[in-house]
Length: 425
Figure 1 (cartoon, rainbow, N blue to C red):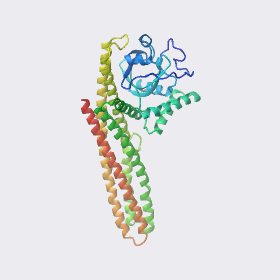
Figure 2 (figure 1 turned 90 degrees about the horizontal axis):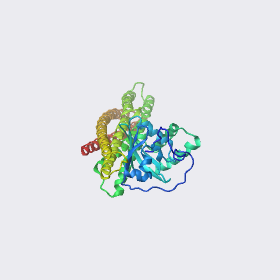
Figure 3 (figure 1 turned 90 degrees about the vertical axis):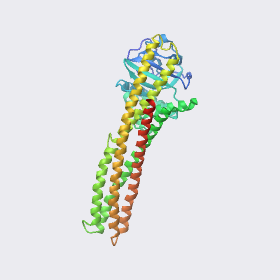
C-alpha cells in the first residue's frame, strides 16, 4: 500500500521517511506476473501481517516489518497526491486502487498495482505486478507530478487536484473511472501474459467496462448533436416570417416544433445534461460495480495463493489470518453482487429513458413532415426554407442513432452484469 500513514515513525532514516534527498536508482526487484502479495495494517497504517511474497520482495525480515508503519516501503519518487487520495478514500470506508512505486530494503524499487480494502480494525493492501500501457502512462505522469510537488511546494490536496484534472484530460471521468479501468486492464494483461485461458468472469468485467466507455462516448455525442439542432427551428421561424403573413401555418409549425423540442431538452438534461444525470449515474454505478468485481477476483486469487503457502503471515496465527482473508473474500463477492444488482437496475432505467426520448424525437419528425408539406405550397422562397427543414431530418436521424446505440449498450451492460452475477453465484 505504501500509504502516507499518520503515526510517529520510529527508528527510520531520513531516506525512509520520504525526504526529498535524491536516492540513486539501484535497480528493480524482480517478482512474477502471476505472484500476488498483501499486507494487513491496523487503522494507523502499522503492519500486522503479510505473506511470503511481500516479505521477499520488500527485502525486510518479519521482525522489521511487523509493528512498523507501512511507510517503511514508501519510495520518495511517489507523488504525495496518491497517498492523499488513498487515505481520503479508505478512511471513508471505501476501497481504492493505485499504481504505487515502493522501495525495498536494499534501495531497489518495485512497482505494484495495489487494491486497498478497509477491513475491521484496519486495512488490507493486495498487490499485483502491473504491465499495461496505462501503467507506462502513469509512470510518466507520476514523474511530472512529483517534480511539480517539489518545485511548487504543493500540498498533497493541491497535487491531488492536479492529478484528477490530468486524468480528465486522459479521458477518465474521475478517479473511480480510472481505477476501475486500470484494474480491469491489469487483470486482463496478467491472464494474457501467463498464457492462461481468459477467465470467463474477468471477460465479463472487461465487456461491461468497454460497454460503459462506449455509452459515455455516445452520451457526449448526443449532447453535442442536440446542441447543434437548437438553432435550426429559430432560423426557420425567422425565414417563415419573411415568406408568409404573420401567424401563417409554417410559423405555427415552427412554434409547435420549438415547444416539443423544448420538452425534449428538459428530458435530455435529466438524461444526459445536468449534473448527476442518469447517464452519469449509470457510469458511476457500473464503474463501481466493475471495480468491485475486480476486487473480488483479486481477493479470491490471494486466498488461493495464501492457502498454497505455509507459515507466511509472519509471527502471527496462519489459521486466523486465513479466516480474515476468506471473510474478506466473501465480503468482496457480496459487495460486487450488490453493485451488479444496482448496475442492472440503472441500465434498465437508462434503456427505458432512451426509448422515451426516441418516441419524443419521432413526434418531432411528424412536425417536420408537416413543415415540409406547407413549405411546398409556398410560391416563392420555399427552397431555402425547405433546405432548413430537411436539415432537421439529418439531426433527427443522428439523435435516433445515438439513442439506439445507448439502448444497445445499456442492454449489453445489463446482460454482462447479469452473466457475471450468475457465474459468481
